[in-house]
Image (cartoon, rainbow, N blue to C red; front, side):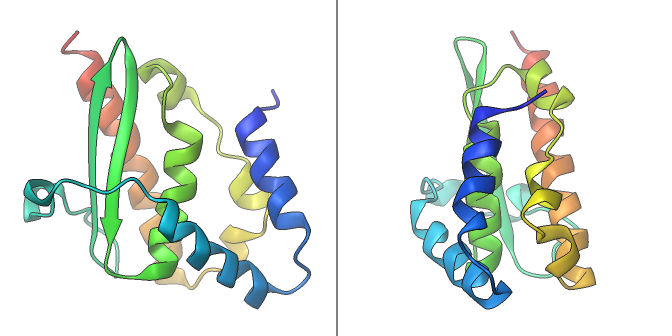
Length: 138
């Protein structure tokens, strides 16, 4: 099933021929990341499995999940900004069931170093776990 947000991301990345340009765009996207509260920049919110430090928090409002995050690495920050853009404002079940096909469509999976790829998997897993945990609190 096509997802409008993922389709928009694929479209945005399609204008770049070179991966260096895509990296530059990821760095630009890092500026769009919703800021994380300083009390969430602690070990408790760090995603295990990422080479760089990544903090993610989630809240549920009216049955929909909203994330905030930060990272000490700008490319990672751009990647988490993309994940938040795709996952924000969805129900926990939608997030758990979400096929993040844009990752392969824009070539992200194949152009990341193995450690960044592991970090990407860890970020997705943690974001889906937050959705599950928050859904049980409703």
